[in-house]
Length: 321
Image 1 (cartoon, helix red, strand yellow):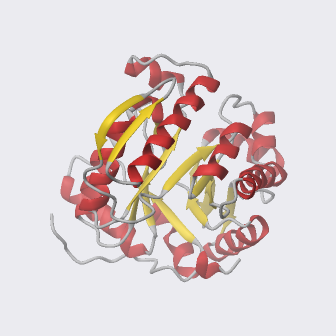
Image 2 (cartoon, one colour):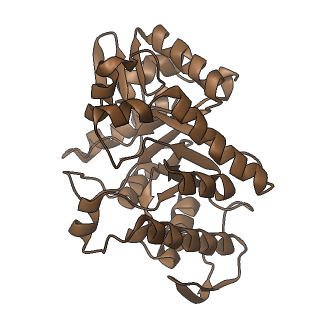
Image 3 (cartoon, helix red, strand yellow):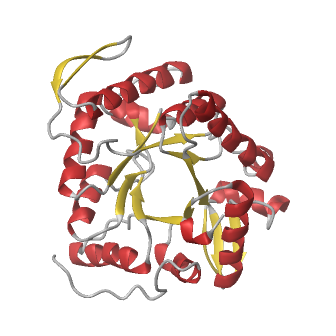
């Protein structure tokens, strides 16, 4: 894969009590050369950021970078409001919004929200219906839908889509049914480890190249069976260390320390050039075009620059506050 086709996603900076400093951090992400800025969605575990508000403010202090939810929990949103919020942010950002969504998984989010945590099958069934409502929204006019979980009657499609194909859809997936659904419906598949078992043994298996390759193949095969182009694939480097400084996810770090260092795209360490070489290798080996290099966008900026995407300093001029 040509490194020029790679796309890099940065995490939206953590909330700062100084809103001007936070906006400067967002501008610096764009100056570094990242292609997208993304935020996840949780209401537990000390998670600070509301995804919609954060991306809306980020849209106002950037010019070209894509804005991605990576990913929303479908169970915390009604499809009609999800469609309208997506369309609104897309219009106000000049067509830069991309909707990442999943079936939900973290029990603490459900208990904190007062929402029942149903079986995986039921959660995915709901997501399938939500995706169909979003598809109908792209067709314009009015949306009518009657399913087992959602009923929508004469939903007005306003604002209309900014693009004929609508807002791009990202689906987060780790297990077979979600991987197949992502292949059938998504523009981008965010392939990640299954979250049910954080034991070191389970994580070693989940971040092994053969496991990741099999998951990617499952999504691509589903796309082919549905007669549609293969979706792009996104991976996250959960364990990254550049010149002795690192951004590490504990459960992946334990698996890496258990013996998979240098053998998985989930972990990259060394100089900026070393990490750039590893990104290029795994991108070619697995056919992965979209990458999130840890959670520290400044740390990974030299890697982005080496791959021809921007500058390591990320110097920005003052913009609107």
